[in-house]
Image 1 (spheres, rainbow, N blue to C red):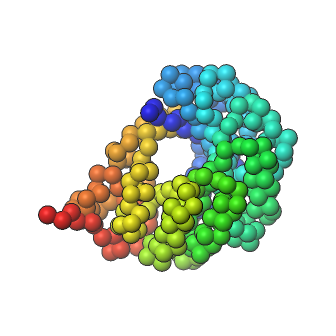
Image 2: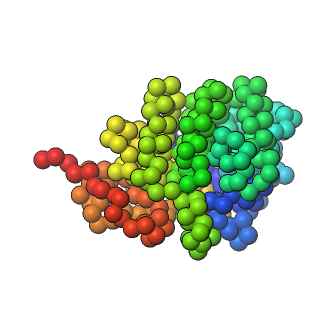
Image 3: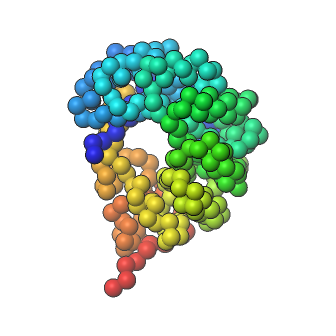
Length: 305
């Protein structure tokens, strides 16, 4: 199977998520022009028939319909729009985007209610807009997948988010461990407030993984090393490890190959990890996490001789 292409079109966003992995990129990084994106779409079609358009928040671009239409004209079979979901509150926007060629939607949901979700994205009424967007996309029979960033604020609420996913008959749910960006790392109170510890949240993550198994929903994880979850769930992590991906960002192209460790992605391992049976496929935790909390909680899985 050929790699999926991910195009980071720019970093403007209508949210202000406290955990945003892009951090201050919206203020310092370049937004791709329409023609630059079209050039990538045209040339990359020879490599992949699947493309993911992301940001920042790609739906705030004025040329979003033109970009999606061009992707369709190139012949892409799957055109996924990754979004915080707020623009899908508008049914006309949904219909037009689908008419242009979008046929899969990756939506971010970080809480099962307004209080939790909105506190994390820094926007009032964000949850109401996203929830209405899910209703609109479901009415239009669209393929939806959901991403949730796991924080100290929402880890007890994960199973309630899972209930929303089940109610909407969504087949894929991705749990990403919070990335400690520069703003968080400089603020001890913020670290205490939103950064979870692996041991503290383990049972909640495993509950979601088990529900996924029971209800036939694909639940994946990112930045959860094998040693932070029970052996029963290792097969899920291994199955979802590092898919073949080509990422386009500004003037940089990064190829991520399946079953190979990615470099320069902000994750890292320790010397003791070399003894672990999963060393060659585990990326380890975010480096910023281990810089703050150390490595004691990461225990290598040693192969029995």
